[in-house]
Image (cartoon, rainbow over all chains, first blue to last red; front, side, top):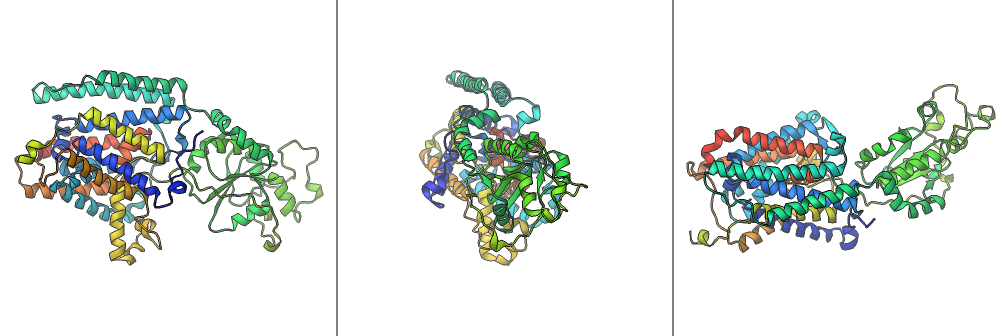
Length: 410
Length: 174
């Protein structure tokens, strides 16, 4: 898989990388202005069915960008897991959307279009932008009063194919086809409302529409990479790391990072529930192996200074979980060397004697017998060893490249 | 008036949409993030607030995230995208000879009414955009293209809100 997203900050420096964003912004502004979006009267005409430019431009842009994104993802040129998908906060989004709709019909712009209106000397756009700034200011002042609602109905990274329980390819081509049909309807409606013959669809529109459907069909046929495909694409280099034991961190290194306030360490315990109940590390998150892939999407939202450590009784299940998380493009994933059994051997010697050992156990079973479900109340769940004597071979290398943690509105 | 007669017509909306889609795709392809506008305005505002009244920033959790301590609210890609957008509009306006100081409105209302409406509408837009965690660009356009459920729900809500009240504001625009 190609490097994605481009490591702009490494290539151009922290502030230098912003030049790229400025260039993208220029292209964005030019297309908005060329589309007529600097003119509030033309924008508002959408809502009287006189000129459905807003709908046409927006949906053309959405289906073109969507098709290209998922085609690139199918071809392995782009990693959809690392694309910023705005998390779904359903009700704040809907209420905010309704307020914005009202603002649109009263004010005549949306924030992006008002910027190009302002740039081309539209006085109403300048005043609108001042209004936007005032609205943003008021939000900052008042959000504390309804913080619970603001953070409610958080469904995380939730996509339409997941909602409809369908494949990405099917959803993409369906949206393309529906949008194209709606364009034909929009042309007819404009003609009826205005009562005069409209310029209609340009001659190139049919071949262009056909080409777009064809691209969406290609994306559908190839399909989005499965977890197995993703693992295959990184298997050669990742298997080497496993074999060289470059990602299996010692309990001492785990404890050092656990106590480092600059690092957020998330222990992922992938064992069966009965083992987890008997004993687990303080702060461990229980994620059964078959739920790891789903959990990965949620973990993408953790801050960049997070280190994930998978663990099972020995290492077999933890290694499987590691492969899944790596395939899902999660950064900074490690395995607890020797698993929980090695941990107990190291830190529970005062409480667990030879008589508690399980003999003739199978691979990845708990090596000790617990009389009760001690969970994380066991003294070994959060040991405080003598730090001066903590000797280990450091293996964690913090990798800061990760999915963008905020979109265009953060 | 002379300038208006020389103004070049706007681009065909489907062509403009295709170009916008390609720009949006490139934004995703190069950076992993989409486009946006309100976030940049937000940070510019917080920057000014931080200059004027830094103590206040430290009292409001929402502002603290962007400008607390040594955090520079301008140190974000979205700010540069926003500045670029303004320049892009300027360049395109110059090429299309559409630069003109004017107020766009329906013939039945005065400039003053239009300006008051622009301010109120803008304030609603700004407030709603923060509540919805994004505006038409960041949520509807960018989130819609990558199939976020929330972005599609948001998009329908925007159109619903505008269509629901369009009748009452018909004099302002027609």
